[in-house]
Length: 200
Image 1 (tube, rainbow, N blue to C red):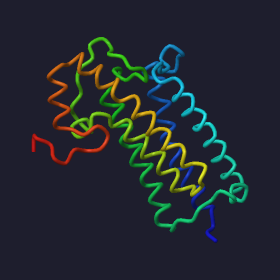
Image 2 (image 1 turned 120 degrees about the vertical axis):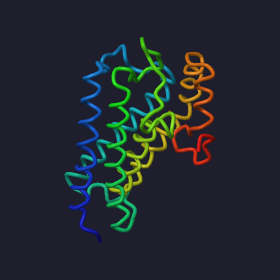
Image 3 (image 1 turned 90 degrees about the horizontal axis):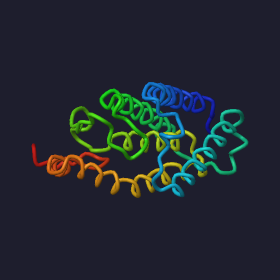
C-alpha cells in the first residue's frame, strides 16, 4: 500500500498555481460577474459545475484523510502519479501563456470583444483552443494524482462540454474573420496540434 502523503502534497502543488492563475486573470479581465457567465449549453454547464464541486469535496476529504476515499481508489504506479503532477503543472503553464496572449480579449462567454484580433501566435500557432487543452490536461493530471474513480467524471464532463461548445465558437469566429479563420483552421488542430499542418 502506497504512502499517500507525498501525493497529497503533489495535489496541493498541482492545485494552487492553477487556481492562482485562473483567479488572477478572472479579476484582471473582470470576468467574475454574473454577466460574464457562459449562457450556452446551460444544462451541460450546470452538470459540469456540479461535478467540479463534487470533485473538490472528494479532493478535500482525500487531503484530510485518504482512508475516507479508499473505497473508490484504483491503483497506479507511483511514477504515473508523479507524472500527473507534472502534467497539471505543464497545463497551468500553458494556461498562463494563453491568458497572457489573450489579455483583455479573454471572455468565458461566446462573444467577440471590441478590437478583437485573431490570435495565431504562441500556443495558438498550433491549436485554436489551447485554453481548453490546458484545462483538460489539468483535470486529467488530478485524476492521475488522486487515483479515485469519482474524479474521472471531471475530465469526461469537461470534454463533453467543450465538444458541444466548439462548433458554436468556431462558427462565431468564421462569421467575424471569414476566410482568414478558415485558413487558420486548415493549418491548426482544435485542441491538439495538427501534425500535418499545411504551412510546414
